[in-house]
Image 1: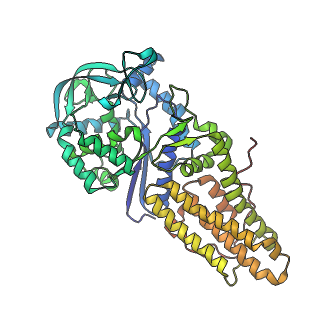
Image 2: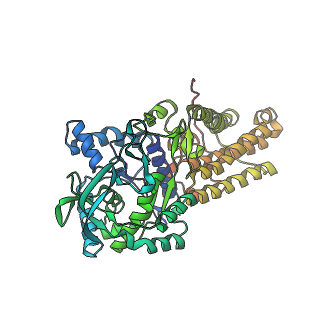
Image 3: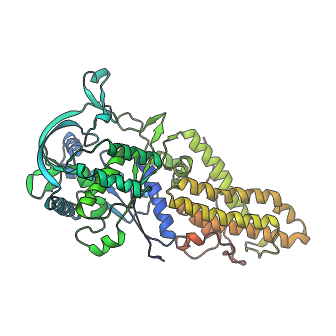
Length: 520
């Protein structure tokens, strides 16, 4: 089904010491939906996610729990991160762990290449370090502590005291790439999206880049520097390289050439690593920079960014156990403009579930199938002559399919869903206007009734295909209720708006409510 166009997309690799919350789930379902869309549109698609398992924070957490770091990360990944993918119905192609030999060996190979090319040198370093961010903090992210931390310097993101570290480290000549990075942002305006993120990155690079410490010698939980066993590679350098090591960098050139470069979707708090340090590392290694970096906003709860330490993190299962995975996916992808901050509330989720899913889409599907069963013995009727209202529905479907595809190309699943929802609204209005229950009482209107229900069934066919990347479970049920035997995931998305694909004479099957009512 591939049209030969490569679409390689990644989530950030998550730090498993933080249990998955709805923010992690938000990023993951956004990437999964984009990947599903491109895969179903015929693009040569590959979706990667995974876990970042080295660093000081992990070492300390393992020690606090009385186990080795490897035992600790194995437990976290098996008990929390693999289940997250199942909970949210994610169809990733690969899951990389930075403790896997396939990753560690290739990271050493990459760093050795930078060293051999003269981009790494030894030096001494003293700076304030945040263990939570695993980062030496720039001045802009250092604040004066208050309360219990008065008199100390704290991290602007974690509000916890910073540690003054003095080490002999190896440095990457990041400062040499200032002009090349600015040229990249100028020549490829979509390299960083949205515009607010791009402006932030350009401003940061223009303010001057310092060379980057890329090793640590104070602890040993990490990948060894190949030419100096007393150092481990800085966890962020190790982590960023997952995007290349997972697709065969250094060992499988054919696979690497087929997949690379990638699109990266990240939270805005890790934008700088992906849009500044990572492309500079690739330039130094003589490799293509990523196709683009898209920074989405934060999920806010009660006006604050979710945080494990502040106990504002909500586990995805708290939502899926009540509303189901499709409602989770639909809500977060439609309620928040992708790229902006968005607030989560149970009231908003519940209201949208009821109005848009249960009453809007779900009720449309149920009553259409029920009327075909009642008035045509469960067989999709042939359409007669089309009236203006019928043709308007056909135009809505064609326009929505094209607009949704264009929105997905822009990394705006929220705008894609909004475009697709015009079909739901149009069909519900169409049923109200045409009153098929009244037509059914008049034998002279039999052909008109057939046209109306044929139009509704064909509209549902388009909805099932277009919404399948967003809501794979409920659309599969609808697809089966429409009597379709071919696999839904094989229906070409970019052809979904073409009218007349549901054959008259098809037998429909009873449809239980796609989105059952939930007692408050």
